[in-house]
Image (cartoon, rainbow over all chains, first blue to last red):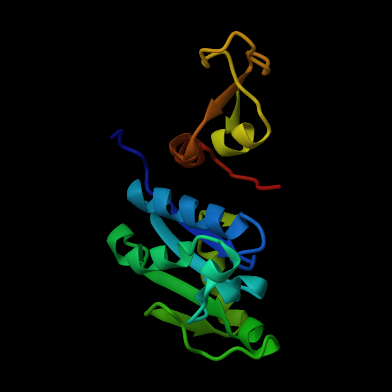
Length: 123
Length: 51
């Protein structure tokens, strides 16, 4: 593999998991960035927080459960995962996710963490 | 050169001149490429602007 410079890539997830393909596209980009050994952070905000909620059953609507792939984040060195606390509260969602190591941030800390990125891709 | 996402192109029935079919639908200035190219180009760019 060619020698690429390393940048801090942030994937900002704002889409719910199963309505459109945005969430799956975001996952694909995150995994490929990790494969290329780029420092990649994941952010979940707005309807994107639904991707982290536990006990979902997409198979019941004949949709493949790509959220199971989140369990592989560690193998792609995707270790920095942030969720917007305000988005969870607005949706009445618990701070209980189907993956570990999710940092719940208030708006200011969320923005601050995002601002440290070289590239931000929003899905 | 302008790079087109292979998944999106496939969804819209677009094929380029690299495809074996003789009915390429895309101008030669466009290339259908994958996520690896996205990574490479993103890392080489001074800025990445997403619309």
